[in-house]
Amino acid sequence: MFKRTVNKEYKEKRISPSVTAIIGAVLTLIGGFFISYNYIQTKKVYAYDYMANIFYESNQENKIANQIIEETEGETEAVEESDTYTDEYIGYLSIPKINLNKGFVDKRSSENDVEKNIMVIEGSTYPDVERGNFILAGHSGTGWKAFFNELYRLSVGDKAYITYKNKKYTYKLTNIYKQPKTGKIAIYRNYDKTTLTLVTCTNNDETTQTIYIAELETVEAE
Image 1: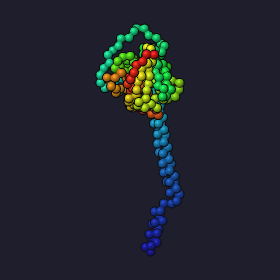
Image 2 (image 1 turned 120 degrees about the vertical axis):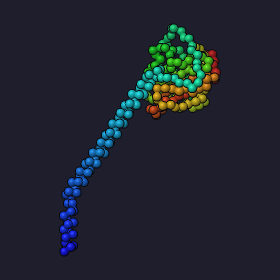
Image 3 (image 1 turned 180 degrees about the vertical axis):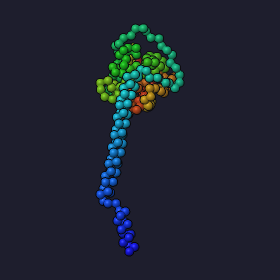
Image 4 (image 1 turned 60 degrees about the vertical axis):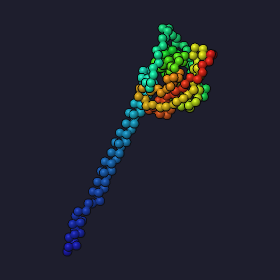
């Protein structure tokens, strides 16, 4: 008698297969919804980040003349410049290791723009200023204006040459380092030396820029 009662109660409490199937289907739908939602949200975040990086990189390179140049010590005396200047090339940068030979214009010229040439950064000095720092910036990546695209192949000890005012300046690369793209460039150099600084976006890295420091070795008449 007791056994029959227990079996009867068990049968009454047991959930039917159809109800179990319905509950399972509902849970599957809910789980699928959350998985899809998270996937879509992840893609949206990725898309926003991608577009933000493109916008940031574009603004960083197009407005590189407005970057704040921070140096760790010392100051360079201001150099008086003529009121007249030309839009033509006034000198050339040559780096034989990467087959680079590109002209630069006066830093006050409208052609002094990374969208058109390698760019002389405002505030830098020209090669003929003793203990000065000649700073050039350029695009990397793809396209005809990516003049500094091959800089990543350079190593400490490699040579770079500047031709300016009928003289050839020979520099040796002494330091290469990266910095985050924050709108500022910290330049670490020896202030007892005349230097050349090259700045471009880091190869295969959208978040940093690479700075190349070279020190003057010799000056020869052209």
